Image (cartoon, rainbow, N blue to C red; front, side, top):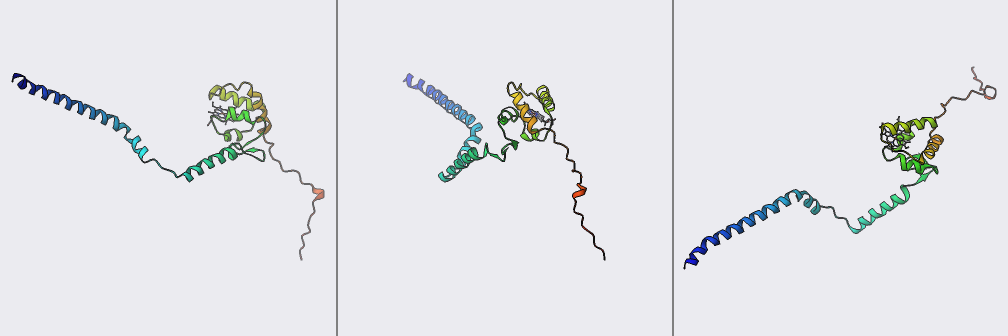
Length: 169
Ligand code: HEC
């Protein structure tokens, strides 16, 4: 009899503990779920593509890689717009990671001028030492991006001009 009477509070206690356990478990779930909710939503709402669409993506990427990435047309490397020759690979490896090729092609200088620009970038812009590539890079830049001769109109060849006669009546 006494045993039975003593059991009742213990049952209540274990019920309470179970309840607390459940509450703790649920709040842990909520705390895990809340920060992940945007990701879960994004996953559930992710775009789905048909097999044809996926194939066309793959095809486009292959065309891009095969045809466009290193295409050279009329001596111009199409992707960068730079003149293409055997030394271009050094430019591609050393000069195009920080800025576009445009910054290079819009400049003109002789060998010394290019050397100064490289020196300036090394001292102030974090350019690494170019190592063995430097002479090839300077060759390339000096050959293709030398100062343009300022265009001067050629003299008129007066002797060979066919003058036309202005007829007045
Ligand atoms: C570590 C990054 C980095 C690399 C690699 C780099 N540059 Fe630069 N370069 C810069 C920064 C930064 C500028 C300044 C950009 C600006 O002013 O907007 C710059 C500017 C230039 C300019 C313009 C200078 C001027 O006075 O207008 C030229 C030309 C140039 N770089 C050529 C080159 C060449 C050639 C190479 C390869 C040898 C090269 N860069 C590699 C960072 C780099």
